[in-house]
Image 1 (tube, chains in turn cyan, blue):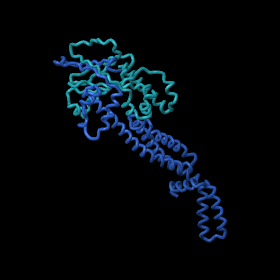
Image 2 (cartoon, one colour):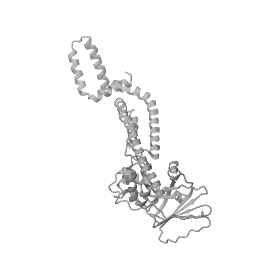
Image 3 (cartoon, rainbow over the protein chains, first blue to last red):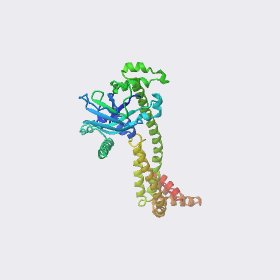
Image 4 (spheres, each protein chain N blue to C red):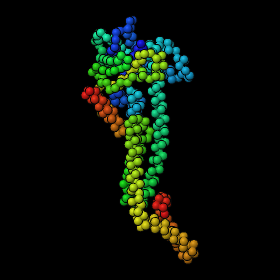
Length: 157
Length: 235
């Protein structure tokens, strides 16, 4: 069984607008598809497998974020839950279903390369948006609006 | 969020396989991502050149993760390239009609001030949409972009239909106004003078002077517009 790999992308516009992330800022004027492919990426690699009859025991008290993946019998990701004060889950995607990737990793039965889009806490934007054009401001608004709608929909489910 | 402050639990169906143990966590961040890309993007030929074990040792990361990350990095950069190609193609397609449309509308506008104003406004809106679809715009090569482009096409087709209907109505009105306009008078006079000159009219020089006066009072663009109008109205 191949291990799961996980990539978490923070889609908060603050990441895009920070001076350190000029390329991400540029992406504000790019297509949404391209925007989705970039962001502040994080790689949680502390992965614990819980099988039938086992309990989740959180020995590591300093854990600030907990991600729970529910797997089906066929080895597919059924659901993803994020418990965190700092992040909200927007969506997830399993890139491991790509047949090209299967051949790359020798076609193991369980092949999960999971990508989570999350959003960190919204922050005051007035200072960092001062030098933005109207078009960029409109895009910032659209991104945040879309994120809020996604969070709202996940709450209402 | 990293391997220290975040735990991922994976709930599996069935009992734990014998000898199965969780893999030890490792550190991976954007710096290592950049290092990996710097290495793999400079490869000339095949993946066989990659010394995965050496990379694994250098970056202190398991091989399976390096392989998957490499795939992902290539995929992201390929998408970036594709997007650039798409933008170039889209811009070359959208710029062409944007150059042609204003000429058609302006010729009509010159001919008929009152009736053609509305289509001109619509055309201006259309041009604004075209402008929004130029490179660098957020609407390019995206789902949102394609939705907007399709609505743009719809607007364009609606406009084409409405302009076809309105063309017949406006043609009559335009013709009436053109007959009273200075441009048409000039055309008629010049034709008349040409005819009279060919007949050997004695005051041909005087007519020639009046022609030159008229032509000087009319700008080059107006005469070009006049030609286009005549073609359109089948004169």
